[in-house]
Image (cartoon, rainbow, N blue to C red):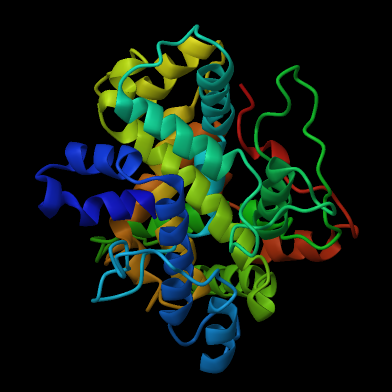
Length: 386
């Protein structure tokens, strides 16, 4: 979302770094909020068919119209590109990035700017970034905003995101409160608790396919039928949480917040310079910023950052039924993203998905899930919690 916006501005500002800094520190919070309203409407208008929301054109338009009417002048200055809708990541993008603890790290940064002087107030660019970040993501959204997912019924923004992660992915974030206590949030009775098991099984099958992609004479353990079955089950599971556009606003809101922080650490800008966090990569910038406010990111933050965009691409393709064949995952257009996911998921979870001896036949996996008692706990400990 904001990463994509910055990319679209590269021709205007000359470099990815300058475009990122302009996105983060040129616009005020009203302009950025209006961009989000426009992005929501454009994203819903661009929903392909078939779509996991089960929406007809008129219904999609009605859902898109939930955005606040945009009065931003001059008209179209932050409008979506004419050649297509603004990219709308999958919820897993926000989940992966939030596992790094970047939300809590930047919460401390903005709090320090607002209430103390331990951090230098820095340049005008950094002060604008801090102002927009506080007004956009650490304040109750404007009335009738598409980001208005909090209320007296669900007052905690973090709890809203965790509830959505649990319902769609069956997973908890790997960290709780600052004192180590679990983060309190309402866990829905209906959730995709089997997601991680099915998805890991898919990753193992795809890896076998990749290893055997050029094997034309020896024994070939590739099982396209198993891959197709796992894709079907994952698609049906994910789509079940989407009926009628359910959780779409919560997803959009989580992605907006995490995309803003993702862009903040992607480049060395005036903001990272003022935080004394210039570095060669995003993970090191986040680590240095965490040091400034006394909160270390997840020990495997780099894996989560590397996972965010490929996971979003693959899960969106599965949801929208855009994977043309099993082979396209291990010898086709999705192969590069799948290989990145296999490697980085293994790092993030501490499991070796490339170990063929740990492979579970799909038939056994399905049988296990059918025999699991109702309400059994998901594998929320799939990600290392340090």
